[in-house]
Image 1 (cartoon, rainbow over the protein chains, first blue to last red):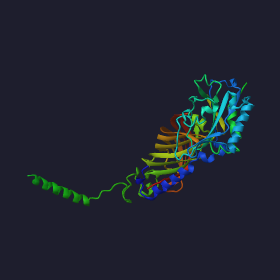
Image 2 (image 1 turned 90 degrees about the vertical axis):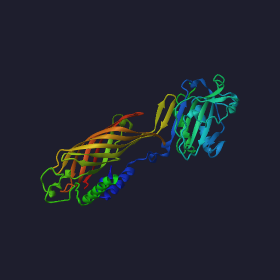
Image 3 (image 1 turned 120 degrees about the vertical axis):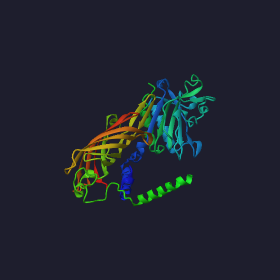
Image 4 (image 1 turned 90 degrees about the horizontal axis):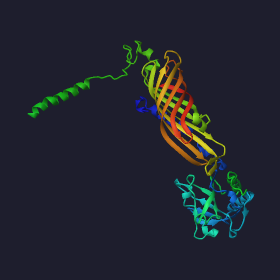
Amino acid sequence: MKYQKFKSAKWPILVAITFAGLWMGCQKDPMNNLSIDDTHLYITNYDTTVNFANYKTFSIVDSVALVSNTQGNSRELTPADQALLQAIISQMQSRGYVLVDKSQNPDLAINVTKVSNLYTGVSIYPGYWDNPLYGYWDPFYWGYYGYSYYFPPTYQFYQVNQTYYTIDMLDLKNAAKNNNQLKVIWNAQIRGEAVDDPSAVNAEIQAVFNQSAYLKTM
Amino acid sequence: MKTIFRIPFILLVIGLSTISGYAQVFYPPYPPSPYRPHPYSRHNDDYTTYSNRPSNHPLLFSLNYNVSGLLGSSHDYIGKVSPRGWNASLLYPINNHWAVGLSGGYQDYYEKLPRQIYHQPGSDISAVQTHVIETIPILATGQYYFSSEKNFHPYVSLGVGINNINYQKWWGEYEESHNSWNFAVSPAVGLQIPFTKSQTVGLNVQAGYAYSPYNYNDVKNVSNWFGQIGLFAQLK
């Protein structure tokens, strides 16, 4: 609009102020209307060609791999991590899988990684499986020296700006058949605010298993 | 030889500029005079009479609060009525019945959905989704007044222009967004009720429909109804 046409100089200023006020007052910010629980995203991916009943035993890592751009990469076992690992074990057992030591040739292996990154800008990964963050658990941990991981291409994800958990289930049973690769057949990601709160992890694991009804031995 | 031609030319320029300095040119609006009718007036009324006519003043400004609800597939995306919007218009009255100009506004549609699991082949996402559509229409608007004589002025209007549509789908705190400019058309009916005898300020109410072709994810076309209430003022 051309305010120059007004003969009174007061009008454009008044109108501009009114408009600016209206503009800002009108918008409803989605972020201000989310509780911490509302921010949580539970994402599960699975290999649709796999019959999960073909696997009977599983083993799980003894600590959580920490991938961080501020603290470096290491393994940790905080109270939240302990609770998380225990929750995964309970859920797997309730689905009929038997927990064994990694030395007893488990059919399935479960890796747990906590990504704790601090970004000052916005960063977008092209896709989850292309994500260089994965594979921090050396296949040798599972006794598969010289093997590599295989991540099938799948759904595109969103930018990373905080702490999240990612849980990968590996097919050890068919590792040799899969071109000497430990194929990821199930993956769960827990994203959002304060996902590593010890009081929240049980509900988080419950949620990812609830939406993965196909994880069962029968 | 050349100098001979230059001398009368220079004299001519000096002469013209001197004359034009004395000449008085009046551009409309003319200074008020009780002896002749205003050039904008289509009647032979005197100045005081026509000054009360709304259509004889340039620029009719209107600022309104806008309530709107989406229709069609955009209604499936956001079902909630949006009470967060405004609309403004600046129109130039051509005569007693027609006014043309620009109108624009802003509307914020918002709906937060309860937690749900969204399925895709090989992938499930449990999330609290927040759906947002923001629209900023800028329309060339024509308004037709049925009558300008009475104490209220019913009108119909048609706006044609562009609409900035800002689509947002929030997965928890992760935002997926899409912004584009689209064609827009908006017919409406309205009523202006002047507060004063001079009819320079008054109440404006309007109701209408707007449509924009759009195609992104699950939203095919953005159409909406709206109702607005506000003030109009004639800017001298």
